[in-house]
Amino acid sequence: MSPRPNRLDGLDLARCLALIGMVLVNFRLAIAPFPSGQDPLLFWFSLLEGRSAATFVTLAGIGLGLATARLARVQAISQTCRRAVFLLAVGLLNFTIFPADIIHYYAFYFFAACLLLKLPERWLLAALCLTLAAAFTMQLTLDYGHGWNWDTLSYEGFWTPAGFARNLLLNGWHPVLPWLGFAIWGLWLSRQSLARSDTQWKLMAGGALLALASGLLSAWLQDFSPARFSPFLGTKPLPPGPLYMLNAGGIASVAIGGCLALASRPALAARLAPLLAAGRQTLTLYIAHILIGMGVLEEMGWLDSGKLAQVPPAAALYCAAAVAFAWLWSKRFRHGPLEWLMRRVCDVCDRPAP
Image (cartoon, rainbow, N blue to C red; front, side, top):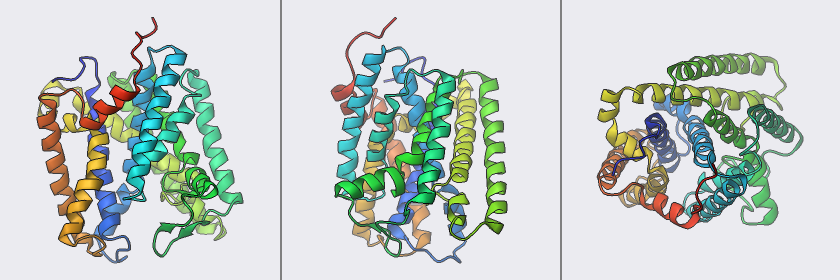
């Protein structure tokens, strides 16, 4: 079945590309969690780490904003909370298999977004700045490494109330502070005219400038900052300091603007149809790359093999199979299996407010 006629195909393309990036990063964590620093492939993986996921969360914010734009405030909050509960259940189940899961964090981005859905644009930008400032303050004043064993990338006490809260808010893989900022940025973008070419070019140009400036500023500040503060002034996702947020947010903006521009060309969009179908089923395909993709890697003896060269072919095979599945599935169904279940369970049935 074809998607809704008013759907922005570029967002589906961006979701698909972000998913491919996350598969590469997560397969790298599963196959070679501690690769040799001399491996030339490591540089290319470092470009994706924290950037693909940031794009994914930004797109979630855009999708949330578009999905609730025509709903009354009560309906929008009800639908968003139901989806959040669904994602929390799915994410925590997935966490038991893959501790770097991002889905359960999504649930709390959505819970927080309930307070922001109907705010004016200027207040969304204020909330974004407040989120970044609060996160940076916490990072500098609290023990960011508490709970972590960096030698094994394991987290102690996750299932305790204090450990869960600490992981969720401060020092998990994708903590609410500051990762909520990407979702807020997405909410703000959902209010813009994303179908317009000038908006798309502004996203690409502005995002590129922001990514470049934050990267240069980070390198300059780290040259003379005290050792205690240096990690928080970097552009790596652990810890996610303010310059990482600006850098990853800029790259996400470039990716989204570029995908919107590419998919706006009808002839090209037709050729991208399999990727667009995969972009409409990213929840299903994300969970499948853990359950099925990593399951196959385990059967092959590739998990924790330490061989970084195994990651690209493994990711390529999974992504090719995932895109083919999504394309065939879309011939008969509008939504992917998990997407259909979430909508069936969570979405309000009331007519949208006028």
